[in-house]
Length: 396
View (cartoon, rainbow, N blue to C red):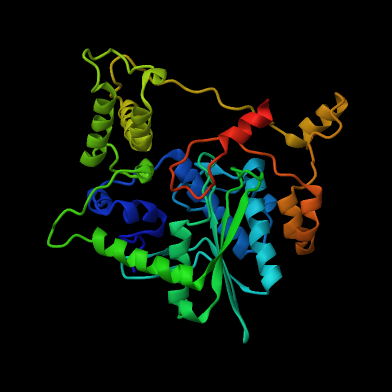
């Protein structure tokens, strides 16, 4: 088993939706961003802390590179912010170890098929006489996109691969727990940790989906599998030169201007578009945005190599300020009347329930659900549609 799978679980949303993406990207270099490299470094630090049973504060000052090698480079260094975020992950993993009495496995290689395999961030396994319990953990260090745990193909594949590697049939277990810990990005409950229980029947149904997707993604006699643009294009290496993505972006632009006798110098104001035009543009918005982002990335890459596009220049953004010496800063802030610079607050309802499961019957009487922002979603979305008449009545 080589280090890099042809159908990696981390790219599963891409190849399960766009079979041709594997062929299109297989010879392209891995031009990772600084954020991706920082994430790889953070994963390596977290794994070392779990293996050595240390808290994250003990890692402050550790350094390494974006390939996950510690101690040989100073490309990245663990500071108090990273330590704080990683401790959230460590706490969740160790909580499950204590709760289940299971065995902790860190960076375990697992394989579902010869083409589908990868390395788990962490797993907790309890194999008792009366029960088999499996928890799969995935650390997401990125702060930009909230990663959902429900229906997450990467974690579902990891679960299937872990069971296959351990020699377990999904029919012999009730299911598995999947966990995502994203300490720099909170969900609607203000939580960095998200978990879901997936039944053996759901796992088996997903196994069949993976098998079909694998069959479609592997070229037959050199034939090019279908290229199907969508939201999954965002992190595809080929998004800048994908003909299907380019054609979708062009078709979307043409749909905006097709009803106009004279082509304007700029897109029309959204208020002038029909509902049908808005729907067509919304359906393709993610695809077009992926292509535009690929254009920006290519322009930046060329500029950093010395080939700056005409009319542009490389500039340095102004970064956030950080305390040079946090202990000294706390003393000074207290002298200036800030009694608690650390801003301790009451833990959230979800955090309380994790600390004591018995609270699940009590917290409903102590909490309320604050409505989130309204947003548009496809009709197939699991969330119920808003009753606009009722909304307007409440506003009157």
